[in-house]
Length: 506
Image (cartoon, rainbow, N blue to C red):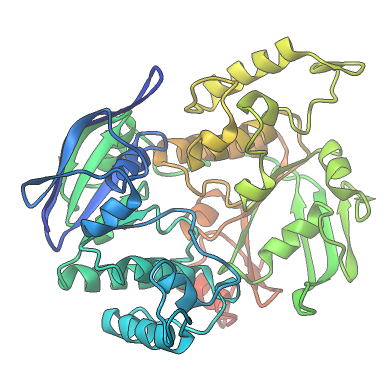
């Protein structure tokens, strides 16, 4: 099916999210939609999928106008969508999630789980999307959950598949697997609209690229375009894709000292296994590894969110093991959580309120029992400008912002006060190249100010670019602590739990 968008426009009050967008997707094509956060990519696709109605313009399939007022209309027209945040029921099985809405029955009115499992098994084999139909979604990896979402669309005979930021929560290995699946789908005639802001991925998978900036199409490019060219089209200015580490910094005494830390998770498994490490003043320590090797539990223990079975955590020589999150933050720890949606902000609070979540007791923002709203809004206006948060104003609820702009709110709050230690888990997850450049500069500024910085990231380029030392976690243990110029092959072996012969530990 050839899909065409002509003059599609969507306004939210005074904000024009999409401004007369023209776009075509050819049969059997991977068409990448590239743009900054808040550029209007998701709004455009939500209109295509019937979640929003356009104010102007039309959608055509094979030259014939389509009327899409709901996801049901889109599905009937052969359009499927996999959202950035998965729409799955965790307590249901894989088969139950895929068949939801058109369940299989045996006897009249009686659901047949066996029929559903067989149908899902056949579908997964046909498309090379390996899943266990009987597994509960809550028990499978994020990569498998994404396969389930794709199968949900394919079982409804989707000819055009929209993937909205599909790699945002995937490991590098899972991303490679997804790309293999996308190529197989393309070769079988399925058209794919791939929404992303990751330049390397665009160049690796796209047949054609459309760049959107501030709600308008600014260019159509070929995947042969360089990352620098694509970044400039996205942002509208030249963007540095490498971290500037030219400033010399005197690395001081240890600020964070972790000794023999062991954490037992809710299932009784050892998530962190006798880990010891230091982070020194003026140093960035990068914590690398495939997600699920204890990094999340390790960071939770640093903030007092998890009680360790053994070991100690000290900040500037003071044991903070019993502090808890609030006291740890007051002690000078800045925290950017891995899951911003659950741990980074309150969706129903405004941007202004979220920017002072851990600061509202300060004299600047309160007087006795009264909040100083004038100062809170003044602070918000300043941070919105400084961090380029794309919002309609400081009174907009954070839940209505794009994922990248929600992350900017968290970063703006945590990087806008004096810190001894910055703990940042996946600090640029969901951010575009312009925002990543800004965040990396702010992290380097913290380093230059003498702050100890711990970065946890599954993006190896980010770890290598920012870090003075790289600690690799595997199976809950530190497999090695090595210099950032360590060859990628060696880092890859450490991430797989293999210590290469002659590895340089620092």
